[in-house]
Image 1 (cartoon, rainbow, N blue to C red):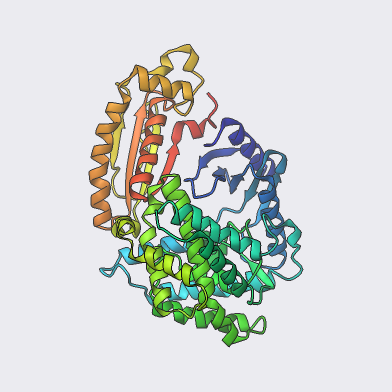
Image 2: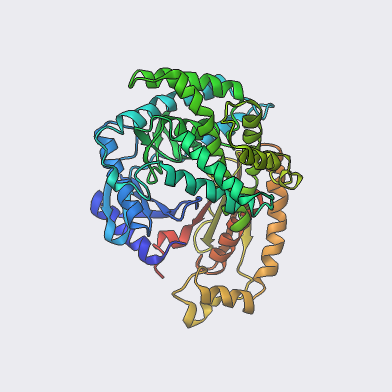
Length: 488
């Protein structure tokens, strides 16, 4: 969660770079990482600020970005940095990702798995930029800045395989012989290392990390990049679970990729094809590990909802891919995962592919009720002023609904939990219906006297609830607090 100090620091960095005041600082919705992002708007300038407590990861991202920009590669401009405070300032590439475009396109048709020519073209454009990132970006890149590994080597592979073992297999309660599985891991790692690995590997090149600005794809979140094989990033892009690209289209794009890469570096096509399916499998295994950690361990429902899509990919690979013969235990546990009835309960396919974005806001009734910029007419507005107000008492006047003492007051000295149960029940009905009907937007606003305590807490709790229950995109804004820079 963002702090007042961090917001003050990113505001100062922006104003120093832009030479003008920051009018609005808006925290962006949380992702799977522990980084925190803010959109900052000035009178004429705008930027994205990033806060990350991991200094080595910050250094890797900044060094890579500076190198890629020199190479003319499609990444965001780096405007300013304050590494002592763990923050840096980037070009604002907007909100539209490649994955959002896929989901929105499907919502406009009656075919949930459709993949039209426009989407194919977007993926082709992304592939053209990807080969530049991997091949041109590798040239003269100093991998000593890579973190946590300089290469996708045996150690990296074993980390991913064991991540899958401990955070997915064990938590999903799939029985296996650990020694035999470890032996297969070693064999599989050796097989993967036969591929030519003298390229830049983005490490998480999926549709959420491809921004579309004026129709052009840009890559973000490559701070975990390292030296590796070409096949890995292509596998991550084409086999992203939620994108659910048809297998025939994946094969077409695979050949498009090979043709594009061959214009920049010699490609041994038979060897590339031989290794490709194995890299699709290791990426799928890594993704399942991440879903297990974020879903089974951290209890984040939208990661659990992705499991059926990822298992569909694994099932297809087991039935159709050219995989090494000498990994029988690994193949066995993967087949057991595919057949596990318990895992099939996860995933609301309608919700998973829904283009719905829920905008949740807190505001002050001293100012106006938030306008609905979507053009759909406002949605829900909940009045929190009947709830016992901590702002009436001196110890809480300079705090907000995110401070522990205020939260404790609201839970023990007010009826806010009962209030929110009623509000959530109303919103639940609309969200479920909107998902079913492929609607794109819903707005929910909580207002109180100052937009500081009760409404802030309520908006935060609803955003957390919707993300956990449905996995839909939630845009959370605290209008009054962001206007004041969270300084009360």
